[in-house]
Every structure is written in C-alpha cells, then in structure tokens.
Amino acid sequence: MEQRQDKNIFYQIWQALSPLVIYYIVYCAAFLLLVTGCDAVVSLLPGAAQAYVAARAAMVTELLGGLAMVIGVLPLIPALRRELAETRNDFDRQRRAQQTTSGIVCTLVLAVSSAVGLNVLLTLTGFVQSSEAYQDVARQQYSVAFGAGAVLFGLISPVAEEIVFRGLIFNRLRRFYGAAAAVIVSGALFGFYHGNLVQGVYGGCMGMLMAYVYLRLRGFFYPCLFHAAANLAVFALAQNAALHAHVFTVWGCAALLTVAVIDVFLLEKMQRIKTKSPV
Image (cartoon, rainbow, N blue to C red; front, side, top):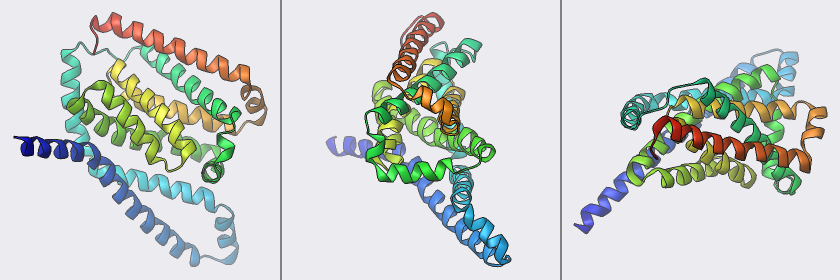
C-alpha cells in the first residue's frame, strides 16, 4: 500500500512539473536553432548590414527568444485544452464568476500597482542593485524597441508562461494538493524559472498573485491579462525617465502597495458576492 502511494506521489509530481520540463527542452532547442539560423543568414549579408544587426544584437536575441517561447508551448496546447475543460467544469460547479468589467478592472489595477510597487520596493532596498545577473537581463530586455517590446512582453511572454505555470502546473497542483499549496508552489516555481535572485523574488510574488487572481475570478483569461499588464507597466516605466524618477520614491512605493492591498480586499469581496461560498 505504501509503495503504491509513493508511486502516486511521484506520478503527481511528474504530472505537475512535466509541462515546465517539456517547455524548457523545446524552448532551448528552438532558441539554439533560431540563433544558429540567424547567424548563418547574417553572415551572408553585406558588411554594413552585419554591423546594423550587430548593433542591435540584444534586441534580436530577445525577439528570437520570443519566437522560441511560442514554439516551446506548442506541444502543450492539447494538454492545456484538456486541463482548462476540466477546470472549467470544477469552477462551474462552484458558480464560476463571469468575465465582468469589475473583474477586468480589478485585475488591471492589481497587476500595475503590485508590479510597479514591488519593483520600487526592491530598488529602494538596494536588492536590485546587488545582482549583476539581473542587471544584465534588465539591460537586454530594456534595449528592445517599444513596439517590439509591447508584443514580446505584453503578449508572447505572458501567454506562453501562463500556459505553463497557471494553465497546467497550477491547475494540476490544485487538483492534487489543494488551492493554497498550488498558489505557493506554482509561484515559487515561476520565480525559480527566471534564473536570478532578484527576478526569483519578484517572479515568485507575482506568480502567487497571478494564481490568486485565477483562483478568485475563475477564468484563464485573468492571469494572462494580469501578466500582460504587469509586464507592460514595468517595461513602459523603464522607458520614461521622468515618470520613473517620480514613482521610485518611498511615497510612491507606499501608495502603489496600498492600492494593491485594497484591490485584494475588493477581489475577496467580489468573490464572496459572486459565489456565496469559499473555494
């Protein structure tokens, strides 16, 4: 009996983690092939064109990474459809909330206030400045032109990562171990996935918030919207030096995080009104 239970535990762990393993393997393979192909094409160009591409190497790398993300999630689409169908049935039995204007507004406000507020907090405490690895990542990401960055960080990255972490990992963990464990573990995995301490802390907190929003508003649309809004808010703020100077203050941090806390209370109230019962 104990041996069978152990097998069940290992099976559950594999079911929960396999989407990340599959995605990461396919992503890395696709990224390597895309970079190799891009280098081969660039080598055939005239010298001036090669210099032009070389000057924008960071942006080209980010764009190739975005394309690799799309390729990486393609094998997971059938599993996502099955998972969302099963989750939708669960949520329907619990009187699932509809995609209402209030739900969308609450999601957008919480995404922007928490993302920017947490960025300000990590910067004011000196945590951001302590990580050279994060500084390198930030320089590369913020080198992307605004239009390309809006597509990459506001559409491709949020949808791809939400498929892996909320659509599959969170839903499977919730089914196996309950909502609270799913929120915490999926959020921690999302932080770990980012590969450096600063983004690990930030991503872990934001991952838990996205799972929480999914749980409360009961639609996969909401964490995708949250993720996109959070990414775009931080990316846009980094492009505006004047606004950046006004927001990155103690009072700015306090105001943003206060708004985020108030929004969580509103989401709790909305969930109680919609469902009349806790999840």
